Length: 116
Length: 114
Image (cartoon, rainbow over all chains, first blue to last red; front, side, top):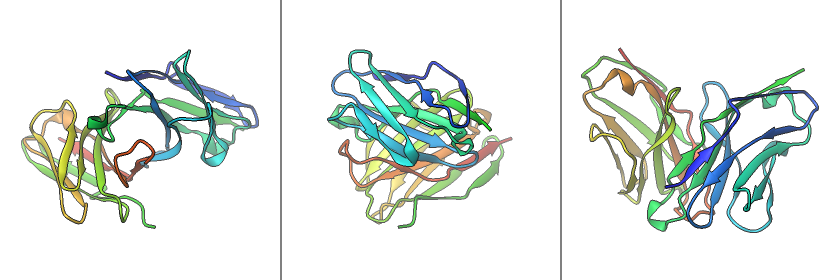
């Protein structure tokens, strides 16, 4: 069975500094990986995905993620964090088995706090 | 395009009652998935429907059920509510089931069981 780990419950960063949110995964077969962000009292908002191809994936709002197969990691990054990036971030993996459909397995989430 | 809508947004029920939550996917999307979000268990997959058929089901008791209509709208039902069912229930829609199709989430229904 697939699994996702987000080792940090919270990440604190000063506005303007680089932001990194870590994610490692375990899956049999080719991984399909996603990042979502959740603001208070809101649903999850899609940021980016890795299906195949370039290891550096660019997404919404200036976010990007680096896929590293050997380290089974998919870390989310932003070169210069904004206060408005403060939110809860989720990494997710999709089961590569076709029969599993769209089922996503999520990590526990990382709360990001960007201080002015 | 309008996003995924969920009704109601907030709900308070008593133990033993049943509840029905509704989800309207993005126009043209045929896949609808449901997730439960709690502080303790995080985000957990409940089930997915595609073209009115349940494709996949998570590890939840039979009290949790769902269905999808011909217009792709979906409902989930929880019978004999327990205190532990208090959660944010999220619905997600997708155009199809290929990995290239990302899922878009609604704002959720906050269910409180007292």
